[in-house]
Image (cartoon, rainbow, N blue to C red; front, top):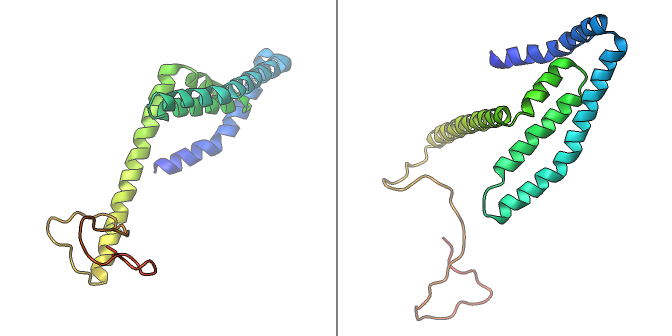
Length: 177
């Protein structure tokens, strides 16, 4: 249901923007309205051109200090989104962009986005695990022994150190797990 409402809002946005532009043009005139749109677009271009370098610099600083660069990358991504919304013609998108330029608002939107992404990822992982268990059951696979954790099987080679015995033949594979 939420996706349907979001889709309808996305489709209605250009119509609402156009109506608002027409009403603004009638209220203050064509040239002032056009001036506001051009000024917002120029501000958006300035923000986007500045953010590319700033995000790269803050990401490098975070990595150099041993911190994960998630914060600077998300902050930069939402500032770039604000720039795109300012370039997009219309006053509603300009208001959304101006809201994203306020750091506390941007931080709340970033936290909400990360939390939502984590919830969706967790739900998808649960669905994947349930599907794998159903497939294992359908194939008649034996249940795993008690105390053994489910996880990936990692294939690799090993060599027993400190044991006396014949040296492995260079053409033959070593013991496999």
